[in-house]
Image 1 (cartoon, rainbow, N blue to C red):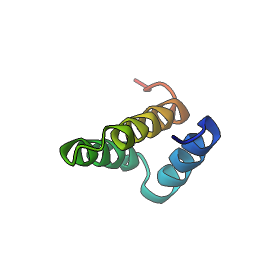
Image 2 (image 1 turned 135 degrees about the horizontal axis):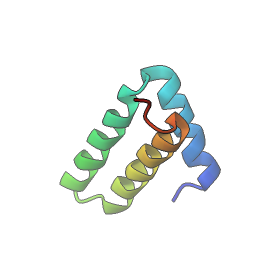
Image 3 (image 1 turned 90 degrees about the vertical axis):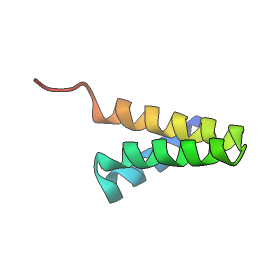
Length: 61
């Protein structure tokens, strides 16, 4: 399992590379891992997606 610092580092890197599409990419990775029976990896990808949502901040209307 990744540490919280590692999760946030990966989340920031993905956001820098892919913009807000990175959240969808992380969700796709989580689903792919689930499909392969890799539950721990799927949980990490969901944690990364959650970290990206926190970094992104609240939606503006």
